[in-house]
Length: 286
Image 1 (tube, rainbow, N blue to C red):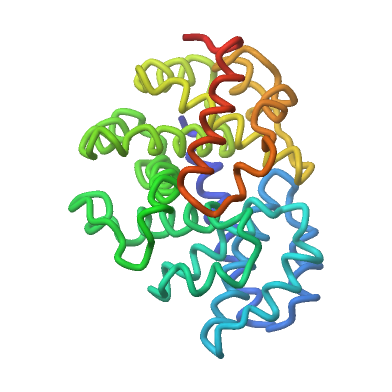
Image 2 (image 1 turned 180 degrees about the horizontal axis):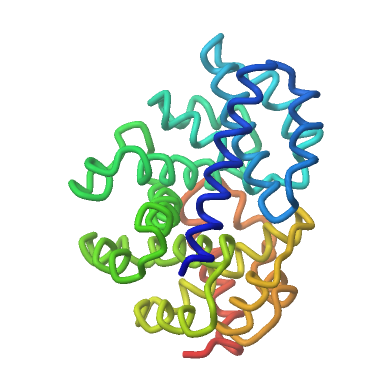
């Protein structure tokens, strides 16, 4: 478990140091150059952190996301999964209404932003989000599925990779929210890495009937790493163990089908998940 905790601490360090660099230098070009020297395993985390910092500055001075849009359409393109999550961090931190902000961006990524909101609240508003199970007033009902995915991701970090604690917290949520929480867990476990096969097997057993959500989360982690060219042996191992195919195969499973992932509504996102789950079934450990 020490390897996992060290990786979690590395991620947190990369995130904070990137924030500090931007706060000190206030120069996006210089920030991008700085991030390109961060070790490849967690370079996307730096781009996520920068996304949050740039978005906050834009939102605080008028809300047009001018610099953020230039950033995401330019140097951050390879890291889009994390960059849109970073925008969610900014929205949650500032407690801004979700829709007026995301209406300024491509709707293909609205749900990634909601994931970021969930991660922020799960990490920094644990009393309200995890203990009291409060739903955010700033987020529309349609985005709650992806919000819960972000909350699920946050649990792996806040519980320091202790699957016993994570399972207990997930079981405290209403049953209808638990699938998305386990999907977020799958993303976090596969992305962070550091688990040996025995512990991955334990995580799998704890997921129970939500094992397919865990596997789907691992597929999403593989997809984001392949797009950013930051694939690791840990992410690949997780894919092979949980649904018996390589990370490359996981990426194919999680590829967007048609426009269903980008409809900007709950039905479209759920339809996309269902299609991917159907495609996973043939290789699923079950």
